[in-house]
Amino acid sequence: MEPKGRQESKGQNCFRCGKELPPGSLTYIAQIRIFAGFDGVLLEPEEGVEQQLKRLLKQVEQSDPEELEKEVYQEFHLILCKSCRDRLVGEIEHPWGRPGRFIH
Ligand SMILES: [Zn+2]
View 1 (cartoon, rainbow, N blue to C red):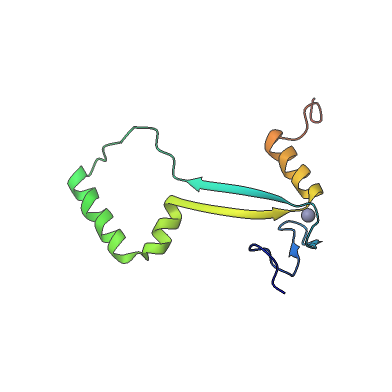
View 2: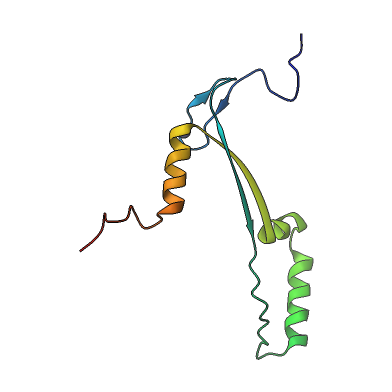
């Protein structure tokens, strides 16, 4: 009998610690989107826009479109166990260490 939905019969592993996460266990999905930032400022290069455009077009021609797309936008779905999720959240909230930990 096939299980309902897209759930795989075999368990998954935590992205960070590799711990096995059997079906039905508590897991967390971290969805990460990385895309190129744009602050609305276009800097005019010294070589002139036309020259830069030509160079850019050449670059685009030579690049793998998939690679190019990755540079602009990438999305990840990471499966985490609870303790790794807690640690990741802690790192995001306090990237420079816990408050009060490095006070001189
Ligand atoms: Zn883990």
